[in-house]
Length: 252
Ligand code: SF4
Image 1: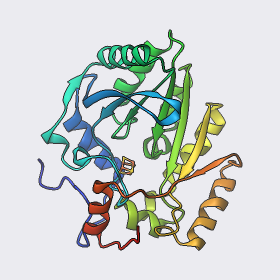
Image 2: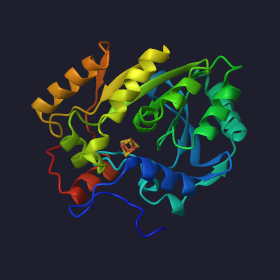
Image 3: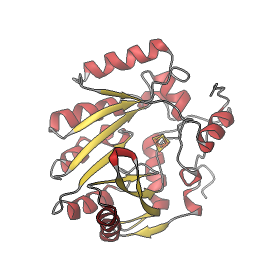
């Protein structure tokens, strides 16, 4: 592992550039159009969904539930081409009789050529792809959102982590100046007419009331007035450990 590759946050962690971390991570988790995954299975959420568990993220949220592959992507996973991911997900969906598909465990928008190529395969099927994203790369690159517009069968769920630069830096580890990127992503998705909704980690044990209000008004300023899915931090062992390492105290 490169020496400056950040893992989980500690009290001593220095804030990082999430775009740089996205590129650093892509170097580890991709080979050509292939990307690392650890497993393919069906989960009960969304009324049943065929899921590919991928590796790698450009944030280091203290409340993150995903396994340690997020922090140590070099150590685990196997490379899968877009066609192989497509076949695994669709075969599992057919076996279990579900009509939705997603990529979880890491940030699906890393490795754009992998994602877009996979979505291209999915276009000729009746399956709906739920794209769960932190919105960092979409907010950074409006052309990426435009390319997504060509895909049918897709619904995006943008998950906001903070409503202020300070909250963003404290809970994701990324520098506060980047906190607007997910809001920009919301604006670009809206403008492109892509089906999407917004979620936010507004758990009051993590986000102060005043910051939640800032988040709501920022969302309004980018033209979003629809449903907001408010998330709560669950006591997954990984989340509990990450919070503890970063010096957060939560009453479960
Ligand atoms: S919660 Fe999501 S965005 Fe945050 S580190 Fe985990 S996978 Fe990445």
